[in-house]
Amino acid sequence: MSATWLFLIVLALAVAGYVVGRGRALASAGGDSRHLHSLPNYYGINAALFVLVPSLLLLAIWLIVQPVVIESNVQGMIPADSYTGSGELSLIMSDVRRVAEGLNLAVAQGVMSNEAVAGLNADATNIRERLGEVGVALGSDVGPSTLAAAQEYRSQSGTGLWVRNILVLIIAVAGLALAISRTNKEFRARNTVETVVLLLLIGAASIAILTTLGIVLSLIFNTVEFFKLYPAADFFFGLNWAPSFSGRGGASELGVLPLFWGTLYISLIALAVAVPIGLFAAIYLSEYASPLVRGVAKPLLEVLAGIPTIVYGLFALLTVGPLLVSVFGDGGLLGVGWMGGGTAVMTAGLVMGIMLIPFVSSLSDDIINAVPQAMRDGSLGLGATHSETIRQVVLPAALPGIVGAVLLAASRAIGETMIVVLGAGAAARLSMNPFEAMTTVTAKIVSQLTGDADFASAEALVAFALGMTLFVITLALNFLALWIVRKYREQYE
Image (cartoon, rainbow, N blue to C red; front, side):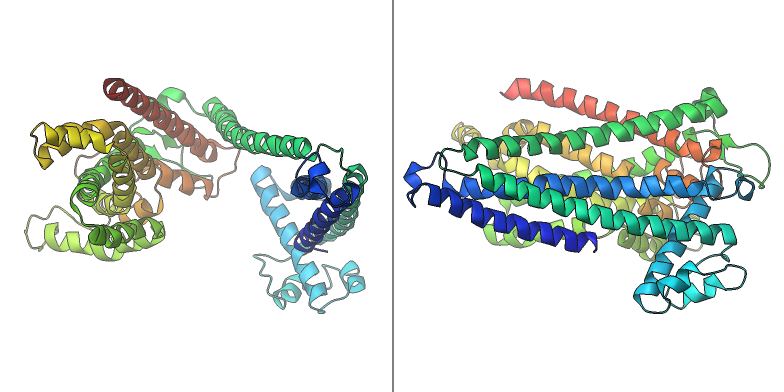
C-alpha cells in the first residue's frame, strides 16, 4: 500500500471519527446540544484530530527516517575498494536506489516475478538492458555488489512498508477508539481541540525556525571545513576565480571578489531598471489611474511575476542579447564596437530588471494605497496640488514600505541564477564594462556543486562558503533596511 492510499484511509477514519464523535456527544445529552460542555462540532473535531495527528506524524517521521536507515544498512554491502571518496559512494548508492526502483517497477508491470528478481545474477543477466525495457535508464552496467545491495534495499524497503502501514493504521484506530470512549456531555472537547490546534501551530512555527537553523548550521559547518582546506585571506581578497577539479590541472584559485562584483553589478543595473519603472507605475496606478485602467493594468503587470525565470533567461539569450549586439556591437547601429557577444552584464541586468518590476510596483502600490486618505485631504485642503501632495506627503509616509519593496527586489536580484547563466555568461572577471560577460555568486554555487569534485574537496565546499558569505551580506542589507524603516516611522507616527 502506497503512502497516498494510506493517507486516504486515515483521512476516511478521521471523517468517520468526526461523525461518530459528534453523534455520540449529542446522544449522551439526549439530543439537546445545550446540555453539552462544548458545541457538537468540537466533539467531532476532537475525534478526527485523535485519528489524524498521531498517525500522520508517525507516517511523516517514517517517510524521512526509513530511507536513511536502509541506506545506512545497505552501504556496508558496497566493497570499500570500489570507491575512493564519499562522492563516488553517493553515486554508487544512487545506482543502487535506481536499480531497486527499477526492479519494483519490473515486478509491478509483470516483466519479472519476485522469485526471478531474487534469483538475478549480474554475471549472467544484463540487468541494465532488462531495466531499460521498463523505462529505467542506467548510466553504467550493474555489477554483482550493486545488484546485491539493490536487492537488499528492495527487501528492507518492502518490509518497512508493511510495518509502517500496520503501525499507522493501529495508531489511527487506537486514536479513534480513545476519542470515542472519552466522548460524553461532560467532556471538555473545546479545550482539548484548542490545545491540539495550539500545539500544531507551535509545531509549524518550530519547523520553520528549525529549518532556518538547519540551513544556517549546514552552511556554517561546511564553510568551516572549506576554510580548513583553503586560506580565508585568499578567498575573501583573491582577484582570480579559477577552480581546478581533479585531473584538470594545478591548484585552484578561489578568489570571491570577481563573483561578488558581478553579482553587485548585475543587481545594480536590474534595480536601476526596476525601481524607477515599478515606482512610477505604482504612483500612476494608485493616484492617477481610473478604476477601469487600474483593473486592467495591475493584473497585467503582475503577470510578469508569474513567468518562470528560465523563460526570462531564454528571452535574454535569444532576444535582448542579439538586440544589444545589433546596437553596440561591431558593425552595429552605433558602430562603437563595445559588445562582442550577446551574453553580457547589460543583457542580464535589463532582463532581470524587467522581471523585478512587478515586485516593486505591486508592493509599492499596496503601500501607497495604505496611506490614510486624511493625509491627502489635509494636504489638498492647505492648498497643495495633487503632485505636491504625492511628493511631499504620500511618498514620505509610504517610504518605509517602498524601502521594503526595493529590498525584496534586491534580494531577488542577488539570488537569481538562470537569467545570469543564460544572459551574462560564466566569466568571472573584475571589469567596469557592462557590455562584457560576467557571472555571479549563485551561478558559481550551482556549477561547483554539479561539477565532478568530491564533496570533501575545497572545489565543492567553496559553494557553501559562497552561500554563507552571500547570506551574511543579505542579512546586513536587511538590518540596514530595518534601520531606515524605523527612522522614517519615528518621523511619521
